[in-house]
Image 1 (tube, rainbow, N blue to C red):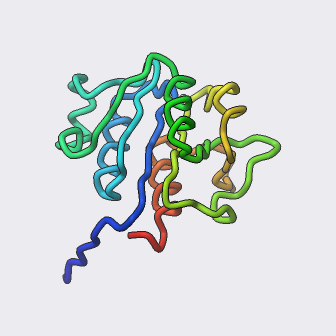
Image 2 (cartoon, rainbow, N blue to C red):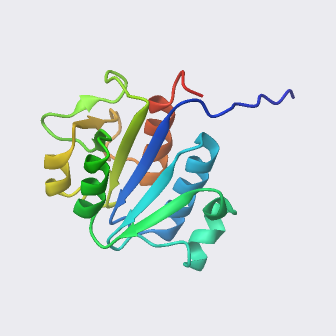
Length: 161
């Protein structure tokens, strides 16, 4: 099997984790961030940090290759992104959400993923430039947060990597 090497082009992707509960999900998101050359992960609130041994189990070393910053609350992380004029797209099903494949993704972007049960905090949604959703055909109407992260991150980077 031939391997294809991608080089990181002129893009900057921040992944904001709004009170994610599972260290395993966070570890998986670190691996996706590493695979896509994402700039940083913002770990907010109760989101497990790299010193959590469960996170290492799924991150498989990606905590060493992906920068992360901790914020006690997600609003502070969004504030930092807004100060540097980074557009913020939250992944959440709301009446105003747009299908994730129909929006334009800029070369610098923050993607917010929310709590596995409660989703993205309403205050964070209010500060977001876009709210996007992944269509669901099954009964559960939700995906595992790490799976959703992979789908949206790769869509945002389509044509950029």
